[in-house]
Image (cartoon, rainbow, N blue to C red; front, side, top):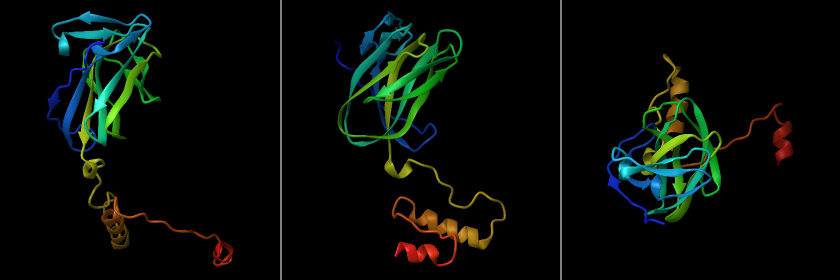
Length: 192
């Protein structure tokens, strides 16, 4: 099996967080099964791509550090809408491709991965897509979610804004919990 080619690039956010760097993994370096094949093409990253056809692919990826990652794929459909599954460490998510030109599609946003080796792959559902590469982009923990500084409701009451400010100030720092009772003291006495 070929050694994984890793390209470090600087990225910017695609839907979530600030991406600081990316690791690229060429699909042609994967282990192919079924009737998936590698095809040479100078226009593709690494000079080749994988025609999934009715097959599948798997590959190990080595993560440099424990962090949150967006995982994307550069791929194209071979004519019409195709649904397939992306797998990482045994967990999967379906994705849809409906364009015939190569595009980057983010499959997973903000997934926490430990340093070391992980298994990724594409499992065939519909099949018949072409895959150029996978990219894992580190997302700074503090930037994982973009949260509005103020409520989005126009003319919100001062009480609503004060509650939102409290939640905003404590987001990611503290756990806020509480109990709601149906009738005044009945549930409170039961909880004691």
